[in-house]
Length: 282
Image (tube, rainbow, N blue to C red; front, side, top):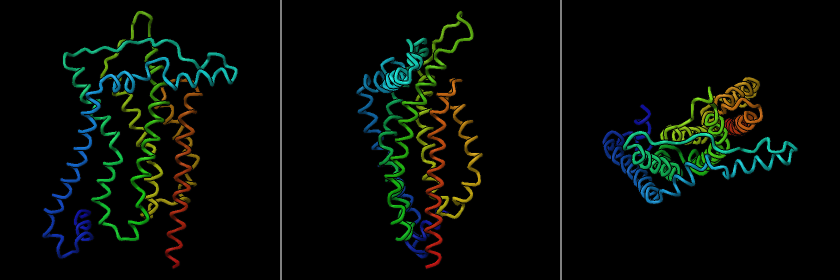
């Protein structure tokens, strides 16, 4: 039904049925161009193995990682001494299966290529969908690619520089007994770093989701304000899950940005609701 409406708007009801295969072909080319861009970047990253792994993926296990240096300086500034400084890494990474390092290398290259080309992928999606919108609608949401990409990258960097390091340091140093050494597989480590970073990037798309829901009339700022106190609890709960470290300081670092996103969503919904009411009057 949605696809049929899309076709009706793009070509008109009479031509939509005849041109169904043409539109499938067009969608195929949008997907092909997006995949092509990902593969080009992935190949470049694959050939720069040292940068991809030693600098980016394995960055959070180095004691000179920017986050650790910043928090160490913050601890001294607050009079806590080296209370926020990170000590030596207390775990080792290992490659267990024969093909694991090569497969992880390919997977990391493709995933990082996907992250780098995210704005282009979003633009290709927008190019396919935008003709289904009326001119007035298209003008109002023309910045979706820029805003969506910006929010995604802010969340991604937050996950990579804040959430991932705290998680790695806590879980990497956690031991049930001194007789048990922490030796993790490279695949497990990479999934943790990429999973936390990508999840954070997607979570930061919350204001954009609120915008579209408000445009559809599903959500309003009144509803969001009504559930504000529950949002605080949910943010604290999510922070407790995202940051395994039991200290309140780490959890608050995650809680504040999450709740900040909710408040941004309230402001966005309020503006959309106000515009809808103004348009209804005129």
